[in-house]
Length: 525
Image (cartoon, rainbow, N blue to C red; front, side, top):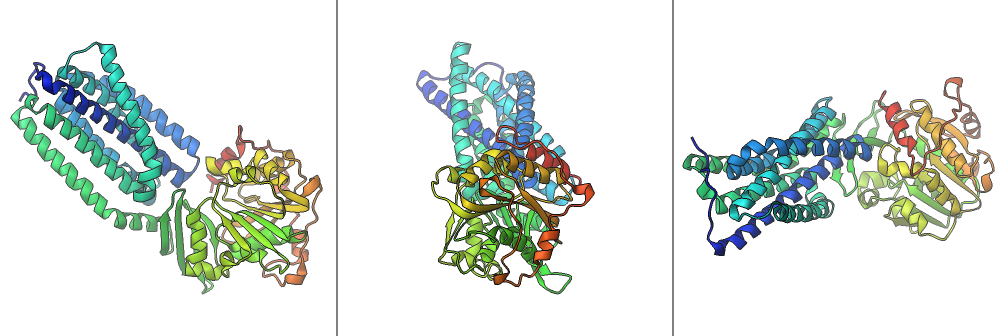
């Protein structure tokens, strides 16, 4: 069966301009779709496994390489460009549209992720690479023109489409539809653009059987995309639950991260409420007081009229700060408004943080802490740095010499700053890298650690304005504490020989060594 006639289609002159516009509009649309697929795979990897730079490098490198192969593979298909282009777009609609769902399923129900990511990225790249050669052939069938002019026209449409796709993903698709539904919608655009172009402009080039086959495949593609779109909610619920041992009581994909809360009975008979951000445990209600008492109270054993909290959007550190009656103001800066809203509105979390986030002394600012600090001119007596672990490019900058230097500039005379520093047992190189980074920023940190069963042994760094070594102690007038005593704080400064001080290179914005150390150490557990 011959799918297409070999001779080029000759169009009436009055239709040429409109046909060229339609083809270039199609090139614009499919280019936007292709870039969205790239961004979706990068973002999904950052959410699930962290390290955005590595995820971006893998996806882009594989896709660009595969695009080159796809362009070569398209050369034999130039004999049947219309049918081949429609087939490529329908394949992209299915593979690209289902890409996020497939990879999320692989991550949730298997131990695989990297291999499927490479395979999916390569397959999408192959298909994207075939688009331009086929569009070029179709453009020449509308009206022959010099190769340079034709390439310029297609590239202009392609690059402009990439711009629109790049803007649509973070500002429209991700916030309003989420990753899975956003990818499915883009898959539908891919299918519609490809099929409409061929059906309207080049249907006479197709044999009857090819037209029938194209119609059937396009209809099946539409059914699959619509069904998957409708099933997304149930799929996400099942996939998320597969990642967590306890029942999920709240979940949301915010602009910045995946937020999940679970609740179940602990072995001690208590209700165990847990918060996860991008799959990383932030607290367990059974023992979070151990973490937050150790984080807050040694730092508060000094001037603390005005307190700045960087991170800590769950409000649990603020709860401990408000135990001091002479605290006048608490400013909390957390990037994600979805987290701080949860801390102010979700009943179980409000009960746990004792409604601290709604206290009139507390001001909540939703902003990037690094950028926000650069714009401030005031100082604070106490600064609590309660950031997520530096396992992603976005958080690594918050453990840099530059960030600690910025924070120091806003520390009042005799003020104190504490930094959560991860586990000195599970990640000692990371822990002592934070110490070296604080030293490079002009501090003499006092490291200490406590036991938090949900996390294991967990460590902190306390520093003081002026570069002096701070004394670790407690203001026992506001006690009693649930997990701390002056004697325990003194003992917390002692590290066993196998976890004693390491001389590590400081982490900076231009050389974020802490990112590799976190990844190498925590991958062992």
